[in-house]
Length: 223
Figure (tube, rainbow, N blue to C red):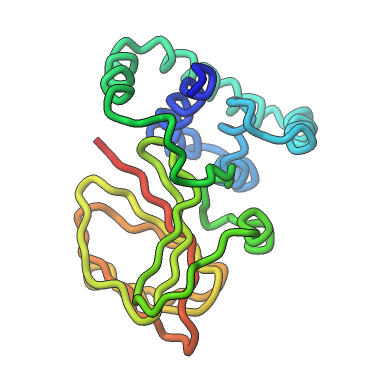
């Protein structure tokens, strides 16, 4: 893998894990929508297509608040690049990960949130299909960036109870409906709904629709 691509992956992971919640703390709903969509980090990392980058710049011209968010993001990004600790961790990871192997398609799909547009996401993942199978759960990974991955998931009946201490999970429903149990809490999910799963809490999913649930699952490993 070329050095440029390695640096983009390294930077994206560090930003995703450390900066997002800091940036959304004191901004307006409209700006937070852009932050949650992944547009800020993708703009700063030169991952947006040219037309979308231009649209983002037009938004930024009319918003001092957004300009401040981008400036703060870039400041933190610059500091993170200079981190000796990050460099040490990266060198260790380089030895363990076969970068020349591409097991997933690496589509550039924004990090999903409750602000995600259903129709846009459906367009983004066009071409990804779930293989025919009678298995209860089938997963197709389509993006993996070291500690962060996105998968297209089909569930026929249920997801058994599980608990994570180092894995942040969230999912976005594309088809069907289900009930998610998170500890003592019940959450009914339908098409277009997004849910984040907290660490250290038992959770399970039961399909409530006649047809299977189709969802995008996001996972981020926390150290």
